[in-house]
Image (cartoon, helix red, strand yellow):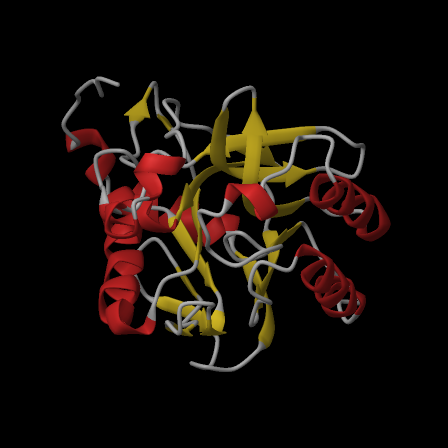
Length: 264
C-alpha cells in the first residue's frame, strides 16, 4: 500500500438543476492540475439533496454518470459522487465511483433521512461496499450513514484490517455541524482508519444553510486538513500509508474489537 493523494471539492450546489451543476463541476475540475489518486464531490452533486425523483432521477446511462466517466478518464483519476438513480420502480441515493477505464463501483445509501421522508421515496441499500484504490480499501458512506457506527464498523481478521479509509459524502446542514465534525473524528478513532468528510456549502432550495466543514482526520482522530466553513474550496491532501501502518502496529486495538453480524 502506497500513499494516497485525495482531492476534496467543497462547493455550493444549484438546486435541482443538473445542467448548471455539471457545468459548475467542469469548471472546478479544470482547476485541478494534479488530481492525484481520488477526487471526492459532495452528496447529490448534480442536484443538491432532494427527494424529487421526477426532475432529478436518472438511470445508470444518464448524463451525470456519463459526466463522471468522462471526467475520470480526462483526469486519469477515480471520481466519487452521489446522485439519484432509478432502477425499475425504485430510486436510490447511490454513490458512484467512476474509474478512468470506464468501470463503475457503487454503494446505495443504507440509512435514509427520516426527517425529510427520504425513506418514503427512495429505497435503502442492503450491502456495505469496499472500493480498492492503489491498495487502499475504502468504505463509502452517504451523509446520514455517518450517525450509525455499527454499519461502518471496521474489522480485523487474519492480521488484516477490512478498510483503511472511511469516506462520507454529504449535504449536512449547519445546524448540526457540531455533530458532523464530532462524528468524523469518532469514526476515525473507532475504526483506526483515515476518515474524510466532504460536505456542500450554501443554501439549498428549502433555505437550509450548509457550512461545509469538510475535513480529513488520521486514524488517531487528529485533523489533517479542513476546509474553511462557508467557503468554496478545493483541498488536496496525501494520506500516509506508513503512518497508518505504524499507528496500527503500535496500538493494536483491532485485536480486541468485538465481533458481530449485521442483520439486514
